[in-house]
Length: 231
Image (cartoon, rainbow, N blue to C red; front, side):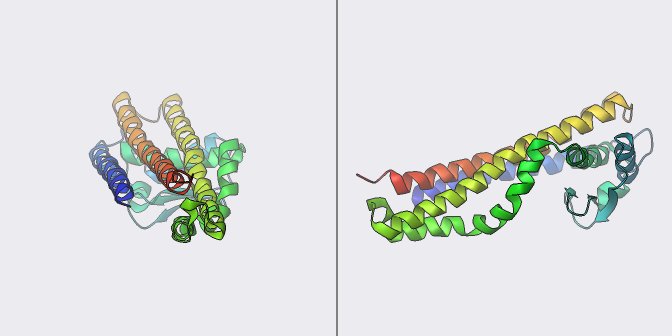
């Protein structure tokens, strides 16, 4: 278990560093005011309209960096700072979330797969590690009966969560690419503002990359505990 704690500690440290840098970037680019004077809400509504999407509502939600697109009720949810502010960071986030709405409208395959996995992962992810640990206690590492199969079930559940993390990567990167392409093509931002939006979205994407690597590392560690000690 010491190895596991070291692994988790290392991943948590990297995750904290990336998250902290992301917050610093957004704070910095929040000071870069948009020359066009548009708010995050206005940018989101224009990007949706430019892509022929009129059945998605842009709403404000509480919190910081709580922005997301909800495909169930077709809403682009922007945090209060993004919804009301008129800066490079707000433009980046608003356009990124609309990128997800465009993916949904165009039936983007990776988003479809991700959405299909959501109900499965929401049920299995919380119990996966406990199943593996329980299986090991019951003798999984020695290949003993029920304990082994309990641990394998836990690994399968953990594998689903890991798959979900990796499927999320192309979804997030594609949404950012769509956002940046639109911001540039429609001359929504100046070159300086564009660089700020691009940098902010790059750091946001890195949080998902770290999460995916962490999920894979955890899966491999527990798989080694279950299968590595067997004769």
